[in-house]
Image (tube, rainbow, N blue to C red; front, side, top):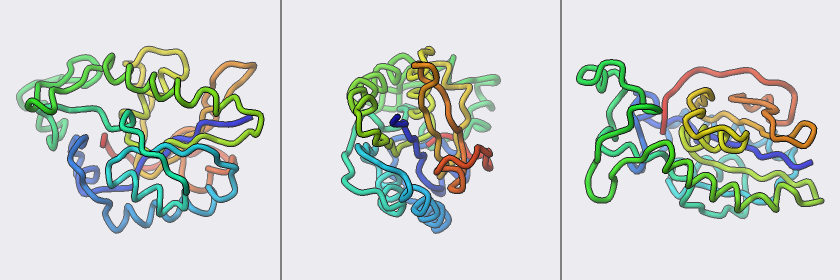
Length: 215
């Protein structure tokens, strides 16, 4: 049966420095491009149907370097709008808001075009994505659906796919240039592999990689 394959984009300067990155179109670093290329061989071994990609350059570049074709841009896969916390690290936020947590405390507005998002609002976005791909996941050809996007939006999407509230995305750490696979067990959505490197994309195992934050 088809799986839902989630790919977080490769490293950027902001992900490396742990800055919250949503609408700022930061490119991949040379290491990020290398990470993306490493995804190509194992992805080539999978039968892929629909591929949806965030419109941000870091996601589009990752998809192309990974050898994915027939890309469809999906605005609902944009990263969480961090509002006034765009470009700021959690450590910096804690200097003025000790104990702050994105999942429970939200973000301040960042201007007319970027008011910030709550877990519920981003949850509504990913629900639209899940509605869009539902038929593809049930298709008899068994072709995977691939989403190339960002850490927090993919974490929320995972929570919603598993029937959990958007805030449960806090439970799913997701590093740069990693691949996660959601399938089914006894007819219910289930995690097949999570936050794994290129060696595990074809189903060989699941091993976590080094940590980077949202974006």
